[in-house]
Amino acid sequence: MGTASRILRFRWERGSAWTLARGWLSFARHRLSASYAAVEALLQRGAKEGVFSGAVLRVEGLRGTGALLELAVGRVSSLPSGPAMQPSTLFDIASLTKLFSATLSLRLVAAEVLELDVDVSHVLAPQGQQLRGVTLRNLLEHRSGLPAWRPYFESSVPVREAALLEPLEAPPGSRHCYSDVGFLVLMELLERASGRSFRELMEQEVLVPLGLVEVGYRPVNGGESAALQRIAMGRFAATEQCPYRGLLCGEVHDDNTWAMGGVAAHAGLFASAEQVAAFARAWWQAPELSFLPAELRDQAWSGSAAGGHILGWDTVSSGTSSAGQQLSRRSHGHLGFTGTSLWVDPERAIAVVLLSNRVHPERGNGAAIRRFRPQLHDAVAEFVDRMQ
Image (cartoon, rainbow, N blue to C red; front, side, top):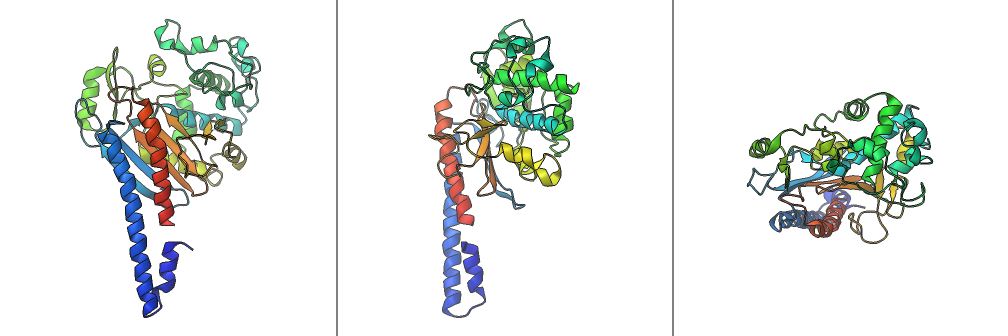
């Protein structure tokens, strides 16, 4: 029985029982206040120590309880010093975009536009014949055999064309290698199969049906003067001081996506913490919303893949995980290079959204965010458990 239930059980009684009830209430408030303070202090320390200039944390109850915790700390920019971070601040969510693209893929599977085990070389013909044997499932689960990343933005060859020419490094399905290149191929696959542009697909199949009005791609021709204006307005969190693009704010950080005009399957979306939480809530309710069939949702959230991916979703690794030690081992989520993450714990029925700009003003603090994430998730788990 939870603390609140114990309190309510005693409320109608008299004398010593009511005294005990008040004691439980005081004890529960103290424990909850202490765990809340621990989460807030951790976030404040992250901003003070330069893990990020600012961050927004939202812990969403997925059984209709809404936000259990929402905190905004720091500033949208440190160089120059910008306005205070707000819960509504928009972030470059980087590879969290992959979750939206995986969702789009499953929507097309549900509509019978594609099959999970289709050979992508058949759809991409006459291009991509070196991809023979690679399936949509392989792309979503990072088991295509394609390399992790290539600096296509440095070449005169268009990014997607270069990705379609990329040879496999391993046989399809033989290894797990987290791959941006695979999601570039995925983007081409979805466009060819549907006859629609990727941006149209994302809007029509995911963002509009879910009412995610503040999630979207951004133009890439603003320049540093536009970035400084956006910082002053405080709407967007700044990212990196790029040596050849200048300070970035409200413009995609990922260079390959930038070279593609800001729209890609592996990166490019901007969102607030509330909207990412709404996305997680939609996945939780997907069968009831007729958004995704229960079979596909359950397959993607089926449990551990020993740190691998299941239909786009990352799982808790057997060793050190960014999800920490306290979230259930059945949790699933994703990280973004800019300092973003989403983890869904089905046992607690919560989604933990952390949006930060850890690459501001530069990206050299990877070790700091790797230490920070598990500490935060452990503190959040303790806070939620105190609420039970």
